[in-house]
Length: 382
Image (cartoon, rainbow, N blue to C red; front, top):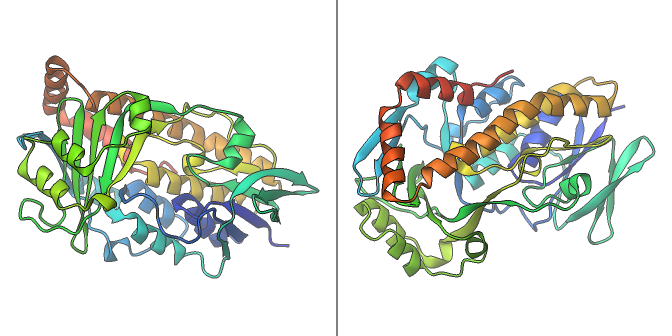
């Protein structure tokens, strides 16, 4: 008899899990708290390791139809003076898969195309789970339940499934706020395929072309955690933060309608060593949320889904297969979470001495060191 997986969450993690589990022969049902697949957030990087991971199961969405390939990443001072450029193309060519800059909606559509006729039930906010014979049952706020042979908690940073497994937790505050937007924008200073990070004093700004006349930008500013969690500023406040920065930075902010500006606090969670119990496990941000400094959140989530599917394919014991999946993923994801945290601390450096130290270190660190780190990040370890 074909096993059925209940997947809680229809974001990148849930859709990736549905696509990979279907590929290895499981039935899936997806339950999502939102009323449709409208994506939260704006855009992201889908790095080569995700593309390589999907290919091991024969899943090869045509991401390039909607997303530019990331070949270079320029690091600059706030005025636009160059610090260093990372050349990704030689490494990604060697690995056999590019990295993409993609709108979140385009990525969700590409993954949704891979799940076939698997049902997605909306307006279904999970509250918890309980064993049910040789399976497990998930309960929802409106009184509904869903039963399957296993449950995958892919319900993001505020996961109800994680909360039952781990108990009450407090997020770990990064100490800064993030602004995000994806306006339609044309500027010769932002050519096709352009990607750059601008480093200032306790503030950063990123610009990435994501195709179809859209540009993804994000900005950060150090502030007290409580202020970041409850930021109530305006578009004008954001613009003032970047007064005197490179012209393309301020022009992008000016071109963004205030209602299109998304504000979130920088947060992750202390690493969770135990992801599941019985026929229940976690995946993606529900298991290991990380700060964005490595641009690996989406890719590592896709890796999770692929490894999970490989362990469940033809598994005779579901619970044992889930623990084996967790054991395989624990070291890599923990390393990513902590490296993202330490990178973020370095990038958000504040004060003239620390800013100069950060910029000069990155300017002069040997290329071999950067290439070795990037290879570890961009290759799929399996």
